[in-house]
Image (cartoon, rainbow, N blue to C red; front, side, top):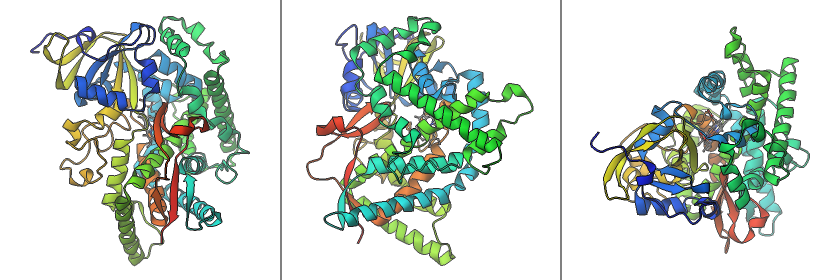
Length: 516
Ligand code: HEM
C-alpha cells in the first residue's frame, strides 16, 4: 500500500446544512441524481456526506469501490438497520431482509425460477399482454377528439398490465387489474400510492427518528409498524394483503387447482428438499410473494415509462426501432413463425441498445444503501484528494459506517461511458468494444446492482421490456405534450411526476399517436 488508509473524516464532500438532518432533507427533495452528479464534478466519484445526527457516510460511484462493496467482499456489508426494517415492514421475512447463510438459502430456492430457459417460456404471455395494452391504447385514441392521437398516462397503464402479467407468469393467477383499473382488486388498492405514501418527501422528524433506530433495542423497533403515520400504516396493510394473497395462492396449488411452470410452482418444487435446513418456512414462502410483487412489476413498468419518456424526446430513435422490428418480422414470417422468438428480440441490436441506454440513463433504484459489518479497506479506481491535499487510492471504513452506492452517478461516469456520458446516446452500446459486463450483472451497468444481492429478476425484466417495447413502438409514436414538465423524484424508486401537479401522484402523460 503506498498511502496510509484514510478514514471518512479525511474525505472531502458537501458541507452539512444541519447536525440533525445532515444532507438527508435536501437529498430527498432534490431531483433524483442532480446532487450526486454535482458532487462527482466537485469531489470526484467518491466523497463523504453527513447524514442525520452527524453520521459520516461514504458515497461512491467509483467502479472498484462498487465492485468491492457489492460483489467481492461477499457479505461484509448489509443493508443497515433502517433499510432492513423498512423491507421487513413491506416484505416480511423475504429474501430481501436475509443475510449471509439465510440469504444464500433463499437464493438457492429462488434461482431455478429465474433461469434463462424458464424465462423464455414466459414470452408468449408477455407478448399477449403487450397486445392487450396496445389494443386498449388504440381504443382510447379512437374514442378521443382527434382519433389519431391523445394524451395517455403511460405509467398508469404500464403498471397495471405488468401487474396482471406478473400474476399470470409468477402465480398462474389473474389479478384482473388492467381491465377494471384495479377497482375490484384488493392487491391493486394496496399498491396504490404505496411508494409515494412511504418514501416521497419524508418529514424531518421521521428522518431523525429513523437515524435513532441503530440505538434502539429490537423489541422497540418491532413496534414501529403500529405507528399511526401513512408510511407505516400503508406498508403494514400492503404486507398483510400480500401475505393473504400468497397464502391463498399456495393453498390453491396444494389443492391441485393450479399447477404449471409459473414462478410459484417452481419455488414450491424447489422447496421440497429432503433436508429441512435448506427449506423455506411457510412464513418465508408467503413473504417471498410480497417481495416478488413489490419488485416484479413496478420496476419494469417504471423503467419502461422512463424509456418511453426518453424516446418521446428522440423521434429518430423510435423510427430506427420501428425499422428493426419490420426487418425482424420479415425474417420471422419467412421462417413461418407468427410472432417474434426470444432470439429475434435478442438479435435486434439497436432496440437492445436503447433498452440498455434507458437503464443507464434512468436507473429506477438510483442509490443503494449498505453498512459495514466489519472494518475494511475500500479500493478506488479513481484516486481522490483528501481534505489535507493527499491523493489516495483506498479508504478505511469502520464497522457500523454507512455507504451509499450511487448507481445514477456511476451510470454517468465519464471515465466509464465517455465524454458524452450525460447525453442520451444508445449507439454507445453498439460501438462499445468490451462485450459482457465487468461491473453488475448486465452490460456494465449498476442498475440491477451486483454480487450476491444483485437483482434476481434482471433477465425477466429485460425480456418483458423487449416484448412490450416492440409492441409499443411498432404501433405508436410518442411525443412530450406541450407545456408538461416531468420531474424525477425519489420514493423508494425513481418516480415520474408532473412538476406542477405533484399532488396528482405518479404519472407520465405522453402524446401517443397511431403509427401510420
Ligand atoms: C428494470 C427492472 C428492475 C430493476 C432496475 C431492478 C433493480 C434491482 C436492484 C437494484 C436490486 C438490489 C437492491 C439492493 O440490493 O438493495 C434488486 C433486487 C431484487 N430484485 Fe430487481 N429489478 C428489476 C426487476 C425485477 C423483477 C422483474 C423481479 C422479479 C421478477 C425482481 C426481483 C428482485 C428481487 C427478489 C430482489 C432482491 C434480491 C436479493 O435480495 O437477493 N427485480 N432489483
